[in-house]
Image (cartoon, rainbow, N blue to C red; front, side, top):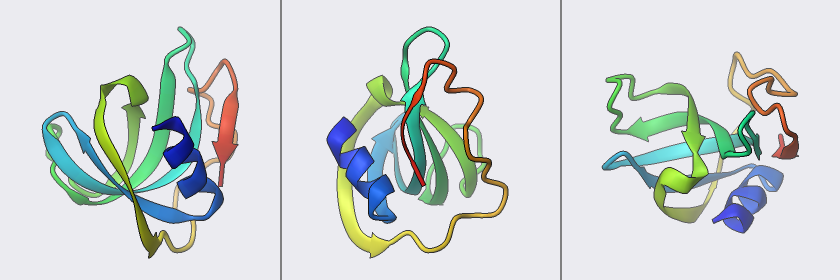
Length: 98
């Protein structure tokens, strides 16, 4: 999954993921490690479900909780409003970033 996410970030492509029992369409923006070494994904969710009820907007996902991840050929478009480079949640380093 990590390679698929990195490729989508580098090529600004959308991903379809399955997370918390919901299918989601996301534009990944950053992949890195949290304070406890967990692999994290910062993404803008364009469509799909969400346990929070917020179906569109910025989300932080734990990669170890992704059930599936599928690369889509659709372009992610420009960086969504509100994105901040150097995501501070990724305290142990960023592997890929738009």
